[in-house]
Length: 428
Image (cartoon, rainbow, N blue to C red; front, side, top):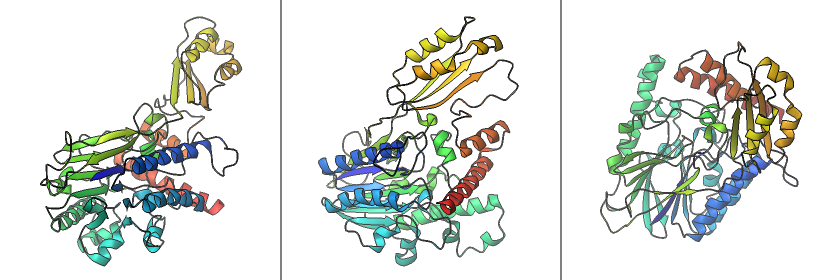
């Protein structure tokens, strides 16, 4: 049985894009669609039996009709090919108001063949049992945890009514653990099984949020301990939410697949794509994964490299050193930013218009920044440019400089993201 695991597609990212002739979207959105097309083509050509999508189809929590159409077109190709596809609801797939339908619900409403949706509504209807995908290679059990909605997880909890934030987070952690345990009890050990979750985990192996990962957060939940997932009941654990592919456990394999494309400079030079794995259905649990028991990383094409250039000229006239630093890089179709560290006398001689002409091959110039040694302003993090930052990135920079605690910073950024998305929806 061949399985493909991916997550964090984020259709609708337009940062650093340019208008695309003949299309109602930018070049950056086209990059994400091209990567998705590559994934779909791979699944069809390699005759994958099941696709596990671990959440976050879109950037916006209430995506445009165009974004939904483009996602549906590609999922339809999997459906028509007879590939069992599981769509887990991530935080970006949930609406701004709880009473509204989430972004993936339409697939269940239309009863799209071979497509299954993993959301809280399943547990309300069917109880805490995993779903079973009927693949060409036989049944596949899928237990799941969508992005936690507190109102669903703690609907019958009297403790939650008077709980503090810290106590509430503990209740959420316990509810998630109980949800996984309840599904694990229904797992048939003779049939391959996967647990898929869209969650932040508090394991030490999970690195600190990278640039795009933090400013794109929408909503916040506590980081869940890895032990809450009761992983020994499953052959594989497919995770979504963190944008960098990483392994959290070996037996059974527990992986974040990462995002399919780089979003900003915080993601630069980190491979993006999806994971593939094979089960030998004739073997017992714990021995079913082929090869060394680890999934294989399949890189998606990336047509927009992020290039950062930093130069500290030593000569009185800094221009030749600046041009030489730019000339060392292949900037074809790149998204590029330049930092020039100069003193006041050098700054007066800088020919920035010529520097821009030297960057002509770049797809987008994210910014050219001059930095003076006597500048009293606090230095910005290396992945942020003031003239190219989104409002959320700028807020993130401010909060970091104010030493705001990570948990509080994440909540503030999530709230700001929701405000911006709601204002964009009103103005659309």
